[in-house]
Image 1 (cartoon, helix red, strand yellow):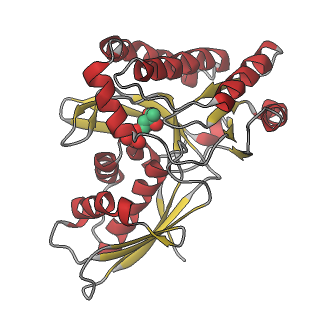
Image 2: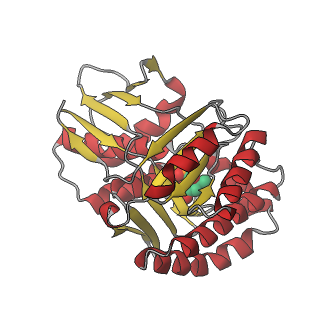
Length: 319
Ligand code: PMV
């Protein structure tokens, strides 16, 4: 009745922003991401008939606030009449600060819960369950370059390129470890309800997905860089124009974006992307990693830098 799973966060290159069904948490648009390797969440789920409520510990501390979403996620795997569980989660990076901790967190929970209960659900089924908890979590079930496509009645997630066949590097510049001002779910709804640019964002997504898919297939770094930065900036402008606005950047976020643009102007293969938080993820070719790292470490306001390659999807581990 207990099992442990490891999952890595993923970084969207073509972003998911907006829901078409808030009950089933279905995204309004498809997305393309890369699964990281060196940042991870390890989650143990132990079902225990003697417990009267679920218990959640994140990095050693009781995490009451996050418990209702985790409990609902466990219900979706094991049914509402399941035994209560003790969930113990460890991450090697700051949580809830725009490093996709919810993606790796929920991906690890569904894999561990399924294994603990001996259910043997398929990866596709687990991706759908993780996606109900956090849209981006569905992508962390898969490794490498991952596409989440919208179907009429759900989602379909798949690896579109294996990590070893185009081993991009990601340099994450951490500019703050404060909790985000507004959760992504709430901010997406604000955008849908009030941003004048939301409709256009949804309409244009298919073109960005096509461009990125072709760039990944042909390993065309500059084409991927151009569409990924465009898609990221477009998502943030949708949020900025919401009422009230959702703004996740700080001064260092902007400084990092300038650092990345200067690097590219001087011939380095690198582009940035930013999610619902102030951290900047610089994606580059392996030969450019040292220069990108060095430039971001020396950018004003950067408190830490993490480097990662591309990794595998969520899986059960023996401890
Ligand atoms: O999975 P959620 O609900 O936390 O939404 C994540 C949305 C972004 O990270 C901003 C974009 C994405 O596709 O991951």
